[in-house]
Image 1 (cartoon, rainbow, N blue to C red):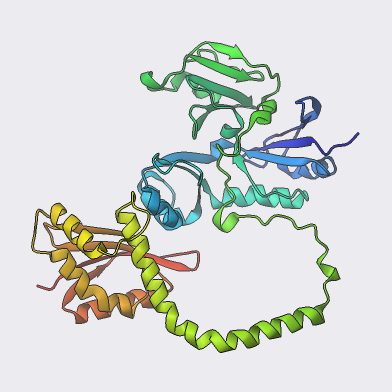
Image 2 (cartoon, helix red, strand yellow):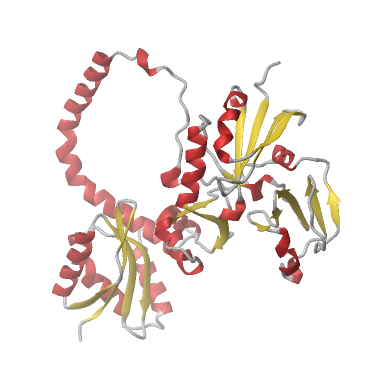
Length: 400
């Protein structure tokens, strides 16, 4: 029998001693085989079953927290820098130990749905799959395995965890012993619970109706990747396997091509060095302008006048303190290449607060040294090393 139209669906637990559920189903949603592994270390037994089948993997949502972040559409271009800082106050762990993932297809006019998971947890799942020889490019929280239906909570149970899909981009996991203490907002309660497989919920918040599927993993046959959040983003992104046999390439031809490219590049490198800074500065100006005015698609010729008018409206027609402060900071930005993430101005205190990224600690030192040379006071917050970059806050005001 051909297996080209069959899927192997796996649900990984958060802990190594928990059971792994698996299911093989064809495109007509007929179950070919199903079962449970005693623990993640037995995943290797599924390697043979995975051959010539599409692999779809979900992970325990109990190890994932779900958030919604108000983020202007244009700012999403810098989401990798903005999201961790924006959610820092909501998280109990150091953000350096956490991984952030979001749905880039979500509407720019709606809050950005974000999943947060410990990097160590993500590494555990990836290591277990790698050891089993199971190639993976996506891991989805099992909340998204369940379909979304308006006014309905879809539920499934894996061992002692009840997984609940509450909305389009979030859900909750409850252990049975805590069901009696679970409190839900009255205005958020559904009209029914739709159960996939057997679910033990003694006093549910709404009537329970059995779905057409008697196995929880069969819910994944309705999975919509556009509505889910793939955790394998950023530093955890996995490369798609390339089936091309690269051994047939002849190294002399490759070497010759490299030499030709190097020779051509040498003719242009000087001009590129001259143009690079100007192009980068122009791109940064345009990106920041579009962040300030998210409804616009390009920066107009009268951008300066537009900014001045908006600033005057915000400051009540003040004396242009912010523009003057930014003007005095221009040499500091030329001296140190810092990437601005957040810019806030407190008119009552005459303070400009910035969140920025730099290549190293020296960039922040250069910025402060240059700003002080312009008779400005600079206070530096904690600097954090993240992914080879340095992130920190700076507060700038007029010298007294």
